[in-house]
Length: 362
Image 1 (cartoon, rainbow, N blue to C red):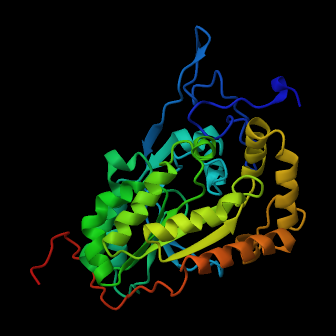
Image 2: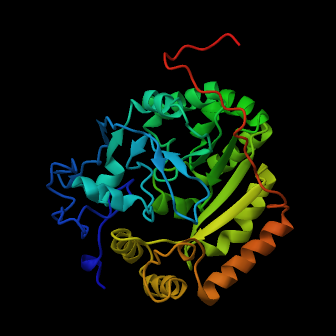
Image 3: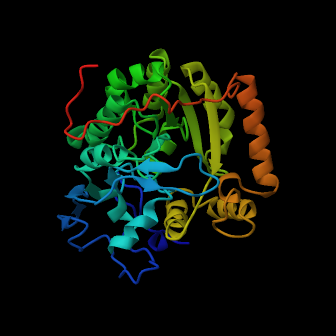
């Protein structure tokens, strides 16, 4: 493939463009010249793509899950879309439902749900509600950069703090340390666990794979800060991308264990729907010398397909390559004292929050 044939990326963004095939008859959008992208050529330079946030007013905030291979039945997503711009993000296809591209739109045209905390108070306060851990960060990161101004995650956390409601958080951001004043006392009651995603240690790979997510050293600092505060902390080494970051498995596990993580897990690369062509464009730009090799191994893990949507298999992978990664991970985790026990949360302390939002004296 010649240089002219390769996709060209926008600086600081993960996806090559909005020119992504869609299952919902979404018209293809090129990066240049479209009002949605806010890019214009000025004196030969491309204007940086600005992030836009639209307010969304959902009727409910709790999403129910019945997938048998996911360890939670409730989740909350304060935002739709994610500015971190991770090219592999399996949540990208959700933007296509709203006539937006899973490409640049997903990471630059965000939706914020400022009513989330009020909806959460109402929904967990309903008669007959059964408390089980609510998962944050399962689709898009609740601590992505826009949380600095919107503080939606913070407000949701305040509701759960008031109600003694258990929760889990998965994030790539050290911004979670901002809320340690709430998380630490909840942890002492057995109400919270935090998973920090550490995909790589290589700063150059981080810059192109997760362009707006905090650097690896900041994530390790987040693990240290959480662990020091007594908050059960998990390291999510995901996704493992063959021939891209798999060589760092042992080093990552050593670093997260030294930082204080108690447990760790991994997931092989998933490429559902529109993510597959986006990721392959990314490979052609950044790793043209091994793009074919990477996809060949990915397909060997996914039984010849770009993606395996089947329950259980999608999270584990199959075949010799998946078995090799699994074995390496298990040996390294054991060596560094990880996964010696399971993190368990309590649900028996739950007290429905007041509907008026006022705190009780007792």
